[in-house]
Image 1 (cartoon, rainbow, N blue to C red):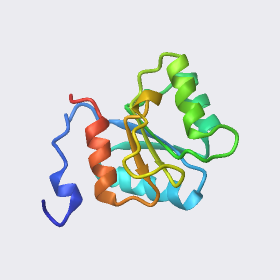
Image 2: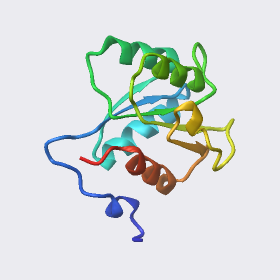
Image 3: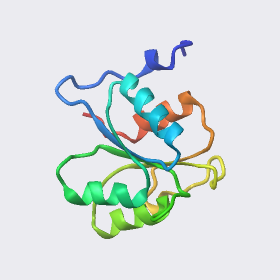
Image 4: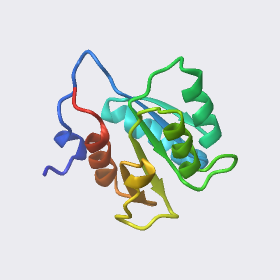
Amino acid sequence: MSANPLADAPPRDARHRPTILVAEDDSFLRNFYARLLSHFGFTVKVVEDGLAAWETIARGDQRFDLLITDNEMPRLNGRDLVYCLKAACVPLPVIMVSGSIAYGEDLSEHGIHTALPKPCSIEDLRQAIFGALPLR
């Protein structure tokens, strides 16, 4: 693997730039995710918590390819957000990045594709994103 984690990113279909929704209550991390994911080549929408994410998805005016969410957030936490998605049959891959989960914790039974501890490395996040996105 090269020293640049972006250099190993798989090629993307030029006709579709995947869109990632990020639910994170920490404003520093929201801004960091927005910059990093844009740098990875994604379209990014960031919201401040699970309820804002749920409202954004439920409006249906924008299609998302992936959700990255924290777990511990005000109003609606990450696990409850995932339960809402499952109950509404919204087939959206989810990566949970949280200080309240253990590294390697299997949350697939809850509809979570990948769980990463906070803080996680950029490389771990990159691998989780490209592993969760459906191939086009």
